[in-house]
Length: 275
Image (cartoon, rainbow, N blue to C red; front, side):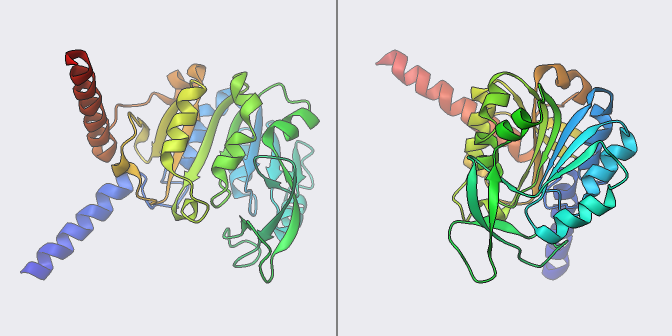
């Protein structure tokens, strides 16, 4: 009986995690392609950072054939594949670089080989690692004379926060419409945490949402309980995109942490007032 109950509890946990977009890497179901669909009417320029084999770009072009897309992909085999895949489409270009917080060079470990999606930037040279150019999103936008970028997908295996830092000018001027950021266990090794994403959103006055199969959820206030490193997609969204995304209030762990953070803040204010 205990085993059956625990099995049932596990199945329920999996179901409710899937509904929140947690640990669910199927783009048709986890909210990733929903974001494209909802924003297709306002997407003219897009960036696919961590393009891998170009599937996200293909889905975007299926829904917005005229969109200008820059695919950023440091793995040489993948970059060449993308060039071949979209050779007939002049509105798609490929940057065979790693996206990061500054311009220069970095070491890229093509773990799993071309198409695996596991390749990532490493701090020092490893066996089989390759040296690749690094470019910021600010630089890429400037070089291509983009006054704005309507949609960015950023799935770069643990380098998402450096990529955000490299887009500081774009965010400061409100030139990014929405940016999808993948969060998972790859954030652990470089020491990145979700609180940095929450703070970035607040600093630049962008809404922070969680993509789910049911829609887009407001993330509320940060609490340590949301820091579980289970794969999900967050979205930084500019004010004029919010009415299209129609976010719903925090639920599940996000709601719990929002209530706890608000309660703690109120308690601290009361104590300060008494003193």
